[in-house]
Image (cartoon, rainbow, N blue to C red):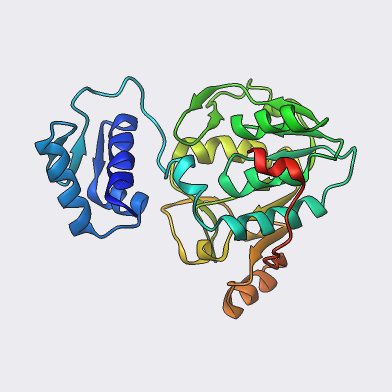
Length: 269
């Protein structure tokens, strides 16, 4: 990652949380600890943040606390072709008229390009997904209520009366920070709370993850493998990971990275 982009992520992170640690910034930028410490020192000298022991903080305290995780704008540039192939397979599971839930994320966002000719009720907590579907499709779109978290482009609420409990879905499609023997993993308690409410509203849970997510871990478990119906990933999935899913009774779909272009409006994202 280029220095300018790392600095943008670091400055964004310190505006989202009171203090951001070096390990958190290493995870966000996929950089070394030494690189992050140099970046913090440089930004401190420029008076764009304040260096503190073990991390950094904003010069002006953030007005509200954000959530952990890489910004949407960064994630959407990573493994894009794989994510689009995975999303194509996900939409193949959908049938017109069947209600679905699409959780916010850069892999699930790619589904919008293949939903333009579908007709179904869609519930989402993703502002970009809702906006694209409203502009480029005839699907019925329902948004959850709550606070819009700008960096991740999702809407989250800690309250039960946020419309979520009033929507039933045949399937829920979602991504995750990591996927391992203990199940799906996320990095923020508010994400866990909101996503668990959504999962409860769907008969089947379909997980969309590129193969790198099998090697990533987090301290928070969203749900066990037994709750997952299907995992859609790319050709980089290893035999031991496929065996793990098979042993848990989870169906595995491997998306082939096709060179064919999706529907024309996909270029308008």
